[in-house]
Length: 428
Ligand code: SAH
Ligand code: SF4
Image (cartoon, rainbow, N blue to C red; front, side, top):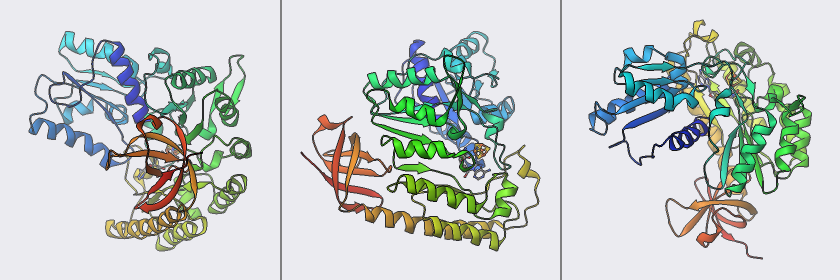
């Protein structure tokens, strides 16, 4: 979502007469879009600014605007942490940035504007610029689930869905710019409830059918799905619509029901396994990936073993895993936590080893198959090779002419290197 917000800020600033600089050095203004989901992400931004200053890439004349979730979380407090920051904005106030820059230039005083109740930012953003063959489209802002460890509901605000027509218009604009793949974004896309033009309610599965019906949409991805709201109609849509990708991300967080309850996730491990079974029955080629938190306050060895049990049962593909990070102001931040950092790190290591083994098995299994791939550009390692993405989300490199960039092609997988698939173009 930050990548999406960053892109929209680029569109907005360009429309306001600014030009993008390829390096921080020499830029008049630097805009940082930040993440607050873990403490590490938050520290990173302050270290980055200090490092730029140290290397002379920015100086006292550089205007620094810090926004996104850290902006919303800390607001004015940021001025105490780093006095060189001039503008502070939040995820919902990105559309006001040109105005904030103008105010700062006129007054020389810090400008702080981090909150907005409504998600009217979308109404004030210019048409999205060209982005390549795949485009992110945010369909909702915020989250109202209030999982006990999570800061997102406090930084991005309560969940609000964009109206259907807004989303369709943005997708149509992207398709006109050569986009083939639409990647729908939201903290919990499955609970999307947007307004139709006639005032009626549109749920996520209906939105999927509407987007699939736009001429030129060849693939749809969506992130993130909360298991709790993964209803049968969405599974039906996955079955009906081949344009929906094979890569489906369904964060589980933990395998112990006791921990899931303490996290306020509102599903049990058994319900999660049943859900995955249903998704796999609807789409046998699906690749399920997930997010895990280890070391939630009070997590015992037994709880952790439950997580490992479900990992082995579900057999996840390429997943994300993190050690629990205390987020100020969240309910879990006040919980007693007798588990040592070392134990948490050990658990993370064990989990990541197993996840890596499983992902490697999936990677190997692609050899000999033919994958429909969207060509994104040239490979970073070898300019003579094209980089593309299969429906599962795996990167596929192969030799082919540059004219294929932006096209869907079939590639026969011949070998693997780490998790990258290598193959040959299938010509009809
Ligand atoms: N809305 C998504 C997740 C968004 S945050 C969902 O509910 O699935 C992305 C991931 O960051 C989460 O799935 C979780 O695994 C991780 N995360 C969130 N808060 C965290 C915290 N306090 N400590 C460690 N990981 C966290
Ligand atoms: Fe955070 Fe839970 Fe909302 Fe995801 S569903 S953003 S983890 S509160």
